[in-house]
Image 1 (cartoon, rainbow, N blue to C red):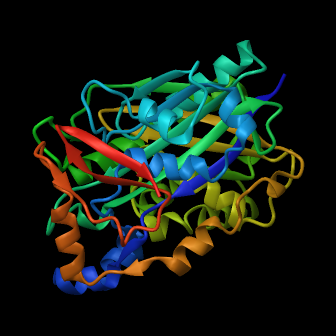
Image 2 (image 1 turned 30 degrees about the horizontal axis):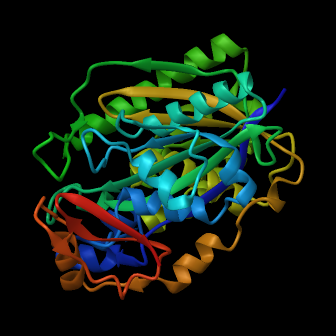
Length: 387
């Protein structure tokens, strides 16, 4: 029996910041951000959105009434959690009107936990073929104004429905993974922004990838030439490019060119959204599927997932017949057309407005057109509504 991704959907806030504007404001050459980092725009989170509303908004666009009744598990992956006790999954369950008799859980391991959630969903459906599992990877990447990591911020959510006989891609049983206690990135409980050693973290990412790739090839008796594309976790899009270049010499020049074309297709959306933490690799996968017209049913795609701290995994997916028919192909193009560009002053004001304490606060939601919004805090409880 085949198990994998039956549906995929995405949501990001309706505001963005242009990296050329940010470079000028910070006294940098634009090419440092556009080429050196590989980012052109980044999504900016308004106070009326958080990981819960983004996750609900992403999933709501793809779920039918039958899906809502048949989902048996809701797995919510994030490193931007809103509560130390209650999971984001249980909020989403109520907002979306999902099956009450479902498990709800939140997972954390930096940017990696979306992959763990996806594998748990695969394994559960393998044992329970009638079940559907909703996996949401929702995050807000925050490093602070005028910091080295500011250019790699972003926000958004990817939702995936995992089922038997999936229509997009099967999740193959060929995973390799590793973990190590490394302080390349972390966010203490008392901080709303992350702490990162950027150069060190980039080196760890590449070291993990190279070691896992060697292990993957040995364990599965496969080589780079067996794949039509390699999808990467993209904290910034130049990072994945560096990792891919480390292994390209393993194949012919013609194959190298094909893999580079696929990589460019896989980072189209990430360049305009920014860092999604847990959702980054899966936005990259979505970008590949929607922007690489050369892909066909039966093609194998490799994926490298990485989470600082650190954990990594490589596995493969196989595309299904007519997978293009299931993709929400206008979702991202429509988002890019409709969202509003912020000035630096407006971006900085919005960034600071999102630092919410436990005090009661009412938010103005009139400028947020999303289905699900955060209206404020009452008695230390977040208030969500469907508009």
